[in-house]
Each structure stands twice: as C-alpha cells, then as structure tokens.
Length: 281
Picture 1: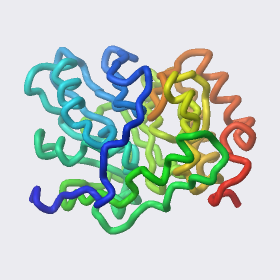
Picture 2 (picture 1 turned 30 degrees about the horizontal axis):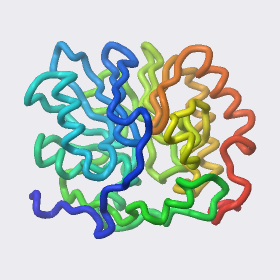
Picture 3 (picture 1 turned 90 degrees about the vertical axis):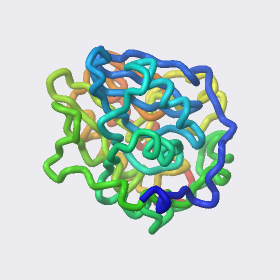
Picture 4 (picture 1 turned 180 degrees about the vertical axis):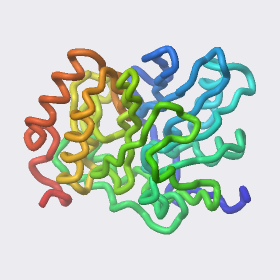
C-alpha cells in the first residue's frame, strides 16, 4: 500500500521561515497550534487522554518536527486517530506521506480535493504576477504537482461531521482551493479556518518573517476564485467565532477577531482581492 504514495517530482524543502517557527500556542485546553516555518498545524484533543487528531501536515520535510510536537503534547509514541486536511496545497501536506507511514492512520479531506491528493490533477499554478510582496514573487518555486496518497485518503463524511473530532463540523469554504474546508465547534465557537482567511499578509516576506498580525484574505498567489473566497469568509463570519486558528499567522480571539472578521467581510474587495493578477476577473 505504501509504495503507491508519492509526492510530485517538484517536491522539495522550501527555505522560508518566520520568528514563530517551532513555537506552539495552547489556544484552548484541547486546541494546540504549532508553527512549522510559515504554516500552522493543529493538534486537537485533551493532552491527558492521548486521544487527538492532527489538522494539516505542514511544510515539505517537516514530518519529524510534527511527530516530535505531537509526542511532547501527548506522550512518547502517541499517534493521532486521524489526519484531517483543510486542503491539499504543498504547505499543508508537506510531511503527510512520512506521517502516514509512521502512524498508520487515516487521512480525510473534502471530496473535491481528491484529484489533488491522488495524483490525478495539479492545482492551477501559483501567480507570481499577483499584487503583493516577495513571497508572491517566489511562488513559482513552490511545489505544485499533486501528492498521490493512493487509497490512504478518504472523503469527509457528507453529513458534515469530522471523524474523531466530536462536536466539530466541517464547512466547505472554497476559493483558495476547490475543496477547502474549515472546522467549527458550536459549543465554544472555536474555528480552525485553514487558509479561508489568515492573520498575516502572507504575500509579504517582511510580514511573514515578523508575523505582524492583521487579518487578510486567503494567500493571493494560490487563490483562484475570489468570488467563492469572499462567500466563504462571509459564511465563517456568520458563525460568530470566538477564537480562530488560521493556516498562517497567530491565532486571533475575542473582540479583535469579531471586529477584524467584520472588517474583512465589509472591505473584502479592498483588503483581500489583489488589484491585479492572472486570477482576477
């Protein structure tokens, strides 16, 4: 079974980092966010119970760091019940094959992400011409060929439940990727937003390095459907989350999150949508 799995031929370590790299934040007692270079993974579960799920799988070559982070948070040789993917871009599946081999756990993603996770189809190429800073210009060097997980990935349940994450529902939030999902728990209104919106201007190298916190739309250089992206942000704002962990940037909560999300919705075209780029209609 393992032999079926492979990364694309353009898979490689990306030498980009931030001041937050290697650091973890306990956002809630059962929600831990850890930064791998410039992207966040989440460990969801009570550290006392060893019953947890990994959301997203970091940058290329990051499996050892993710395993070590999980063992520090839980216990030596602990392993998640499952890996849930918000989407399949390179910085969210970078350690995935090694993690599947090490832990032997199921992986779940939205049905519309399956072609990008089973080697059938590449995402549209990143847009280095998009309005934004140096990270956008660097985007052609990012891996873009699909990962092939073979039969090690399955579609999220159609009823909106998230396997092994009781209380959470998945919400289809396309725009940045066709099958992008965010995860929401009603009882405490905790949101794992993926890249539906982020809390750092991901296109700008200085802001990525310093993790300067400001709400923004999805990373511009990989977002191809801005109308859907705006509708997704509106959908998440309507949930009135109290805390949000995003794929890039620091977690945000309370009044800052509420006012920032409202501002993003009201001024989406000015804040999020680039002035120019090949995916701008």
